[in-house]
Length: 307
Picture 1: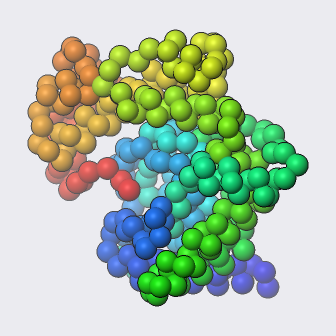
Picture 2 (picture 1 turned 180 degrees about the vertical axis):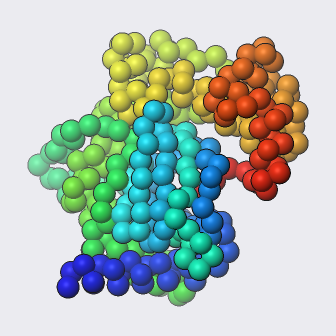
C-alpha cells in the first residue's frame, strides 16, 4: 500500500511539473530559488555546466551525472542534494516526448539552513560520515507531499507569496530530519569543512580566469595547504586546480557555442596564455579539439549548457 501511495504521489508531482513546464527547459517559479525542468529526450552527449547547491527531486525519468572521477545516477522517486557549487557533466538516460524527464529544484541557502538546523538540532549538529558534493537517496513521502503542495500554490499568486515560503521551509526541515540531515546541516554550519570549501569555491568562480594561488585559498579558509587540498578534493571530487580548469574549459566551450567566438579568443577570455595549451587541455577534457568539437555540437543541434 505504501509503495502504491508513493507511486501516486510522485505521479501527481510529475503532472504538476509537466503543467508548469510545457516545453523543454527550466522555469523559475513564483518562489525565489524554486525551479522546475523538463527534458523530452535522452542525451548521448553529456552536457557540461556548474550545478549550484540545490535539492533536486526527480518526478519522472532518470539521469546520470559525473563529478570529477565519480559517476552518480538518480531516477523518479529519488532526490539528489548538491552541497556545493560544482562543475559537472550530466546526461538524461530516460526520457521521451510522452514521458519526459521532470525535475523540481530548490536552491539551498546556507543562511536559511543554518537557521533551520538550530531548530532541528537544538543540542548540536550531528557529525556526517563524509562531505561529498552530491548525495542521492529515495525521496521521503512527506517531502514529496510538501513538494506537491508547493507546486499547487503556484496557480494562486497571493497564496504563493504567503504560504509557499513556509512549505519550502517545511521541505528543508524534513530534509534536515531525514537520512541526509547531518550532511545538509553542514552547508549552513559556520566553520564546517563544507562551508569553508564553499568559500574557496566562491573565490575560484569569481576569478577563474586568473592564476589560482592555492596557498592564498588555504589561508582564506584557515587551513594548511595540505589539509585544504585534502578537504577540497573530498568535497568536490577534484583538486583546486582541476576545479579551476574545468570552469575555464566549460566557459570557453559555452562562449564558442553561444557567441560564435573563435577558439583563440575564447581561450584568452578564460585565462589561457598559450593557444596550444588551451587546445591540448580542451581536447583531453572534451575528446576533440575546440573547432571540431563545436562543429560537432552545432551539427547535433546542441544550443548550450544544461539547466
